[in-house]
Image (cartoon, rainbow, N blue to C red; front, side, top):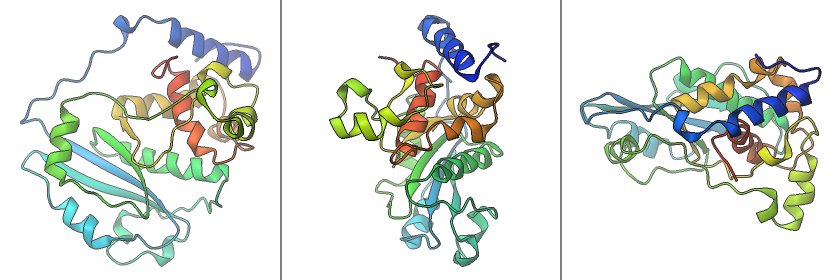
Length: 238
């Protein structure tokens, strides 16, 4: 755990530790052969019904002998999930409203559930997303690159509205230079980055609710929370 008198002090210290660390001491990429098992988990945030269930059913069955996938679904109303989607759906609902911090908490719940299995990559998606490539193709491409994927940008590259209603609304306890924005749909995290991201509250001596609460005033807070966690961890750098 990082020491400091306030949460802001501990956040700043964690950011400094991670960004001053030379990239040469970052854990080496995971080496996977073509015969290594490779599992992908798609984390879906929906209201009640998963659209395009037939497409998802076909996609899950389109892997090769060393490639598999699963879904983890957070539904605002899990009791309305279809019989097919129900086994993938979390029983607990954060009851998120659009543009609320509960969306972040719901996404974190899906990541935690994914870590209970053997997934190597987590992909965020929404109820309207449709997979375009078969699972075998997806696994083979992802296996080649041990990296998370966020199309992220910092405040200085943002629009004026983003700077005021998003970047400008992040709590002062979060290091400003660690803040990034990325649209979460189809964003991808490696297992190592998920584990490190979920461990941030413990490392700074705070509850998850407290850390997430620092983004409560942000418009579409999930667009900043996840890339900013990668910024805090030194994964995303200016």
